[in-house]
Image (cartoon, rainbow, N blue to C red; front, side):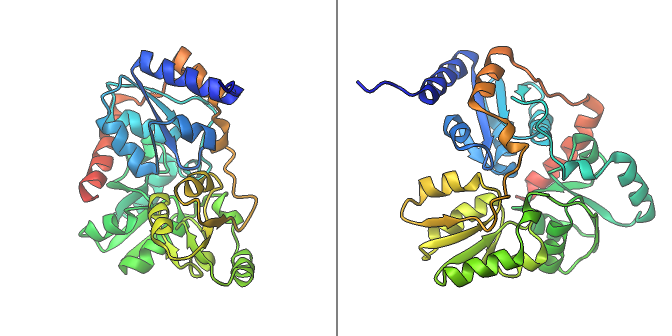
Length: 306
């Protein structure tokens, strides 16, 4: 009988602990491959939110970043939500504060506030409705107002503006990881791989999404990759995408435009930290009830549109 590797032993220990704790492990598509492999569900922000809302498990181990675990708690306050690494934050989410948002709302008091789910619970509580990259266009189209204040990602806002034709006031936030992808990098790869297709996340800059054969959320990119006739796809998103893409499409080649598309916060979660989270149930993520209720309203409105 083949001896298990240290990683396989750790994965087995996590599986056993998960069952004892009545826990569910949720992992974002940008997590390390080995972390994705122990998860009960791997997906994007929208899918993870929906899983958090409907799980029967008592404990949610959220392998992602802080705002995602907050969203899980907003939807499932009766559950214990645990973030394996307390320092796993999101620079994009940090680019908008409640104080700054309130000041902007005062200037644009006839604008509906649409907030990307990549934001804190307190910011969600100041919003009319939330969205994800997979449903931003649908959410904006569903709002009766023609004027939208979209926060905090400017690239997703520009993409949605082009798709909906609505007037969008754009917040100057951005994802540093997606900003590592440049149009020149993509052009060079397309020249080297003439039969390839390029799929991009809408957090990329407009010059990059303009070159894409497909623009969509991570979940939409998985679907596109599976259905594409191309043998080679250039992936305009975070490096963690490649693990699942290659597992699901072993006959295809996937290339990153830049070696720098690695989110340091998403990679903070390791198998050892997942095991420790199951043992200690730390760090617990909670949201004050007043903020939670207001944020819940924005998130629920989003889920009604999906």
